[in-house]
Length: 156
Image 1 (cartoon, rainbow, N blue to C red):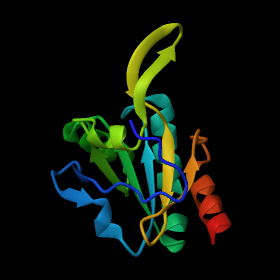
Image 2 (image 1 turned 180 degrees about the vertical axis):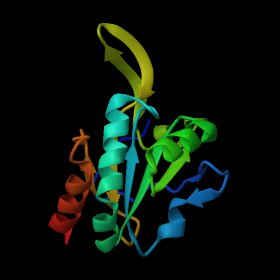
Image 3 (image 1 turned 90 degrees about the vertical axis):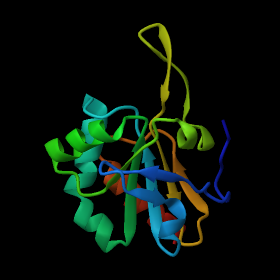
Image 4 (image 1 turned 135 degrees about the vertical axis):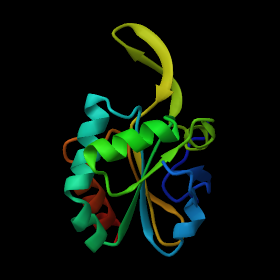
């Protein structure tokens, strides 16, 4: 588990989307990227977060921000999630937990007194040079798109 901070180079990765198409972070060099890590497809908080981004996607596009969602769900789960909620952005599957570990978002969690391992909700904003310019530690699921836009504006 790496403790990434503002100013670090964002670790590159190679993951697949719902159709098995491979994406690398380095494919987006020269663009602003928001990588949002989330716990699980089709759960209340994650659905609210994804739909908030969907509903504000045209504004994010106008700001030149690429959105990439990453969870440890498999491609089939992502396909159902994308189709059910008509999500227009990239969702990538990290079922081997390589990227969630690189970014330090996978680890022990606690819910109602029970401990388990899972992905924490966290968003990394990456500039055109591939540098982490902001980390949203606890995104507001119902207003996440605006958080992303506002944080990128602060940087510029």
